[in-house]
Image 1 (cartoon, rainbow, N blue to C red):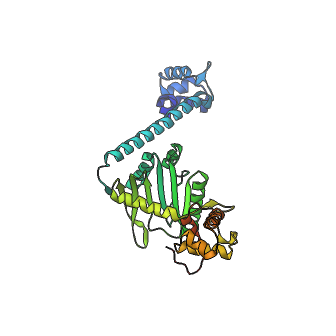
Image 2: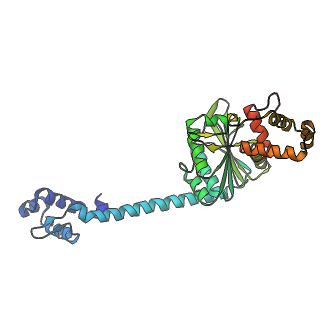
Length: 324
């Protein structure tokens, strides 16, 4: 505190005495020696005392501004240190990108590379979110917020179990409200994070022990490309999520009234039938079948036939039809 306020130990002691007891020349000289007068003059130069005999000024008026200035310097120093540390980690991360994969075995390594994945992303980050859900939204992770501010697109696929978790609802709601694209499927094979199709992270958990294990860091390779293809496979079949009144939900089948003809069309789609085959079965034109399918997609809030078929299978809109 003495250094922050610019007071030497002797100045602090004399000022403390003046505040507590007032000016007493003999007592001051007894306690602090003849040098006390030089100390008082130093306090006067700092406007900590005034008048004759020297009278203390309210300390907050004298040192408050100086303390604010010192605090501002400390905050700026901390921010600069954080920027330099992030830059160091980022370049260290890039310089190590010589191997197609690396095993991260400590929490510190995982945290560093997790932030680096987002900090190096320029176009897109994709994410498999499995149960138990780990909160990594922009609100909680600065690297995700920085990526969003750079215009990086984020796509998330969550398995159904995540929607039943409070932390999952919290994270996915925030993701949706901040512009991330989020879809859902019944289940996913693992957690996954990939940036720009060039760097990815996959936890290597032991069965039955989701919090135990290392993380595999993948760099540009055929293996990473296969992982990206797997994400796209699930993405095409996943159902878009939206923010309901109280929670993040998928559209429920109870919202729709499906006719028998709708169910026939959906069943035929799941069996892989062509539009012509469906039209022949129903005794209508191909254009009518295509219009009916478009109406079903619009009703379900999906953009592809694959999503429509998956949604129909999830909600049991069609019975006894295997999911292809």
